Image (cartoon, rainbow over all chains, first blue to last red; front, side):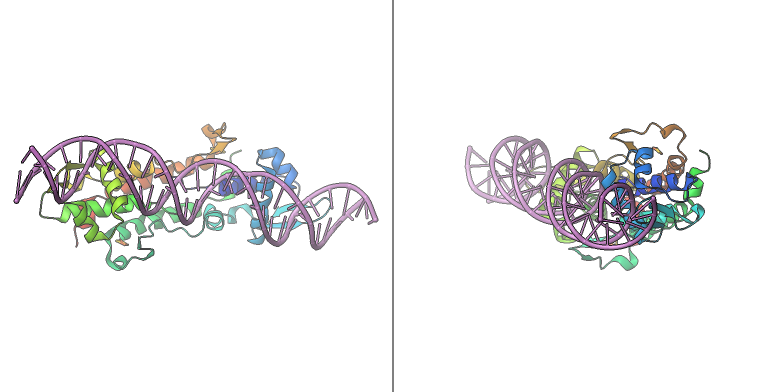
Length: 134
Length: 134
DNA sequence: CAATATGATACAATAATAGTATCATTATAA
DNA sequence: TTATAATGATACTATTATTGTATCATATTG
Ligand code: FES
Ligand code: FES
């Protein structure tokens, strides 16, 4: 069981890498050399981050990416939602339909509590908080 | 992102079903009728629970399954470990090897904290606590 | 206008999840 | 003691999610 998939993980690292750079614009090549992430995969990830307005991009010679938000405003929960979809820790299915007992299911209530806490904690983890110490 | 897979979910429900029954021994057929879980899949799940000593089984005519432990001693965390493996919310890989920065990675530290809490909460959810209200 | 970036998109490989099917074994009841 | 009704063991299949690759289009700059 894992919380964070590879693409989310790469996104976090790439964003940290960009945030730590002095230059405004950071190229894919630079990040690849920094982090040794497969180039094509990284490109796809950065393009998604761009579409989701976490990054700004510049095409053409000398182009690359820059953070669209200050590092303290980019939280893990955002990245997870982008790459892993909505966080629904308990999604009880009953013959592929939604569960009819959902409204008074004690299990669901308990899992929902956990979910709330997890989300709150993930929200508190930002790019800023990750790069702080390096 | 989900916390609980289908087999864990089915296991929980089956155990609840058995726990709620007055008869000591509950047959697969009974559970299938109760929960409408695919029979073969359920059988596999129950056999695993039996091997893992969460259930006792009786072969032959009139056979079936019975809880091997009191419902308050069967917790969600046990079932998840059985069906979903060890809970490692953050498993950072670097070219398929373990991450060399793991020892002073701030992200890992933060995720580990979440993990601790989640595990504690999951431990507290038992079959007993789920069936209580029905 | 050529070189060098990213944008868009389709495709492929692998792994995890979810489920099925079959035969063996054991216990009971007629 | 034998047919029957249950689980045990195990191998197989299907589907979905994850983890990538590859290619061509488009924009920017020198
Ligand atoms: S939400 Fe379906 S049984 Fe709990
Ligand atoms: S554990 Fe690998 S970078 Fe954090």
